[in-house]
Structures are given as C-alpha cells and as structure tokens.
Length: 349
Image 1 (spheres, one colour):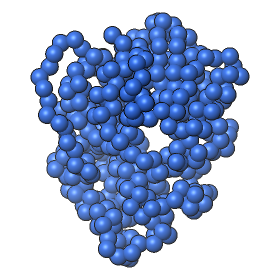
Image 2: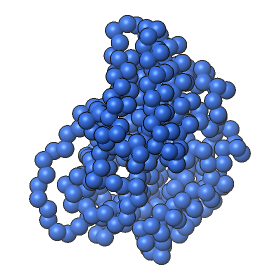
Image 3: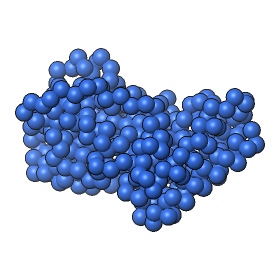
Image 4: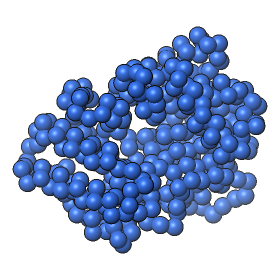
C-alpha cells in the first residue's frame, strides 16, 4: 500500500522545506501547524470550548489525533489503515506522555462495525472520498456518534480542474498497472519535491471518489443528518469550473425528526466526466476532454509503461498550475490544455 509507506497522507506539504519527502511527519513542527487547523475546525463547529469534555475519533495519519490531545480532548482514538502510521503515532504519544488509543482498522470492515464505542466527534479530514463507498460509511457512522455528537468532513468535489486531472491520473495508473516505485524513480527531480509526494498520494490511492455536493447532500438527508456548518458546499448547481473549489467542508449531526425513505443513490463510474452533469458554459470543453481521456484509457492498442509515465507527468505540470483564484478563462484553458496533451498521446498510439 502506497499510503503510509511512500506518502504521509493529507497535509504532506506542511513544513516540507524542513524535511525530506516520505519521512516521518509526526514531529513537533507539523503537529503545531496541524493543531492550528484542528482548532479552526473546532471553532467552526462551536466545539472549541467543549473539547475538554469530548471523546474524539480521528481517522487518518495521526497528526490530527495528537493535535486533539494537545488541545485538551478528554479522550482520543486514532483509526487508520496504515500500520506504519499507527506505530509512528504510538511512538510519539508515548515519548510525549499523550494518551492516544491507536488501532489499525478499516471503517468499512466488520471489526469497526462490531465496536460498541461511540464518540462525541468523528473527524474525517480528507478521508471519505478515499473509501470504497462513502454512502456505506455515512450509514455506519450513525451508530458511532453519541447523542448531539458531530461528524467533520473535508471532501473532494466535482467541478475542480485539479480534481479532474488527479482522478484521470489515478485511473491511468490503475488501468495500466503502474507501480509506485517505478513512478517515483521516473518523476524524481522532474517536479517540485512536495508535489511528488502529493502525486504519490493522488495517483496510487486505492479509491478516489469525486462526487458532487448534491450527491452528499442527498446522503445527508437520506441518513437523517443535519448540517451545522458548511463551506464551499453548493447543492443547487451542476458541476462548475467557475464556482466549485477542490473541496468542501461540512459538520453534520443526527437529527431526531423522522424523514421520508430515500431510494438507493446510484452513481455511474466517471459520471462527473459526463458533460450532461456540468453547467452549460462548461459542457463543450468537458465533453472534448472526456472523449480524449476515454479514448486513451480504452485504447485497444498496447500502451507502454513509458507512455503512461510521460502522460501523467505532463498532466501533473498542468495540475499544479491550478489555483481556485484563477479567472474562469484561465481555469477553462487548463482543462483544454490537458485535453490537448492527451490528444497528442492518442495521436501517437
């Protein structure tokens, strides 16, 4: 598994100038920066004055769990898939006399579902889009939060050019069975070092779900949650290059009132690359990009590993030119440039 071995998970760019990539991120300077982020999120949920009485479940690489404990949380548990991250968190906690319960657990696995323990706060910062089924997870979490408990979500969303490119890179790597060691050897020194670590995290994660805010809103209603905080969460719009950022923030709680039954919410693979699901002004460029991407990914001609590596590298260079503050025309030009890059590779096949 790439995560935990070749990548350090979310926040890998923190203090990267002071350390080498792929090294232990559970160190004081990174913990201090993470503590600031966690504190901001607690303030957004109006929980900053209550944290000393709260039990917290953090799912992730360990830095946030330690940050919660340093901020005074009564009880902190860390669940993560990576054995390496669990060991590093245990070692740091022991060295600094911090009590953090660490377990290597899959949130969608039977072991987690059998646990009777509930929490006042479940903190999922950049996690849910990396699970096999976000809907199943939200359903399971209903039984894991105490009365008046909160769930924090940081979620990738459709509409961002950055997310389109990272998704396509991930699909190319899976389709052609690209290995993380081979990719690192190829890309090393070709792009910024911190971006290499981000690429390893994007391209070799097992699951990368890019859904719309409306998809998650329907799940929230279906499983009887209510929204207590939101940022960049627009449910009345189709995917939009102009509007949507890379991610949204949400805090949700279970509500007592009953709701009508919802049908199963089914999403087709690559649905966010379907131009029908985009704003009118975006449809043409999304359609042309999607056609070129699917032409490459579904090519009947044998595509070499070297070709895949070069294409992913070209896409990375475009991806890191993205900034949500760019003008609409600048954002649109990036997806057109990405389409043209893929077309050049298609023309050579």
